[in-house]
Length: 294
Image 1 (cartoon, rainbow, N blue to C red):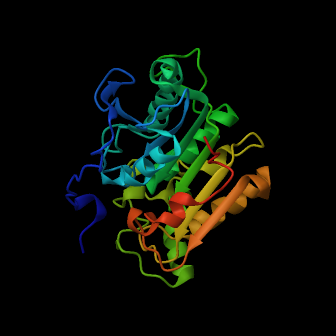
Image 2: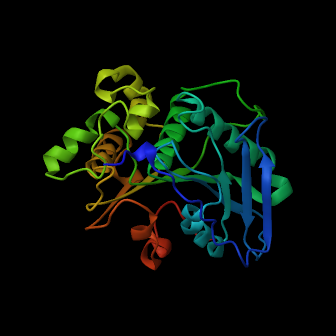
């Protein structure tokens, strides 16, 4: 059976035709994979709230402005600006390097808010799969005052965001294999839980259950405090890449810290891993505490 990291995914670009205001390959820091693409609604507002969308791919694959951005681009019609950044993949740099990079993206957005008519007080992180994990760790560690680095610039601005939308992410990597066992589900990738699984590669090609300190560093719950921002979590019961118990457990841990009024959980019956099951009008139009009308 093919391992996750042995695959050769094909890049399919996002559907950006008809978006008149596109600003591509902007440098948020020096160096490779430190660029972002910015998309603005065709109808200009004085200030646009911002979605920073973080693609998934097991932290082993991925590129900005791929088809995984299509869901976020639907929010242009609600007045949101959409930012798609690149970050270092797990074989390029050790964790938590991507967290430092994403915090630099947040500061870049705030520093350039006036130039692009962005609202620096209305910035949300959105991620799918490993992008959800990165979004959650980025937001949670900022509110906890952790994972601070000297990477990037614009340090007069904070890394704080106003909320997170996280879909089918892996959070406690050491529990993925036993959670599949409890659910009676066979994981799509036989190496789940092993050193050569995508979650093992995230932690330096080591079994997550053998490096619990590193596993904790990559777990958003490690950083939960009562300052954590409102969070909307999605997962599907048909997921065979990441057990949906990852999302349920994280929602429970976060609710215990910040209260139910700031946490929303959506478990979609029979929906598999990947954007396809979440690309629908009901999800895009869902009214919740994160998306205020603009």
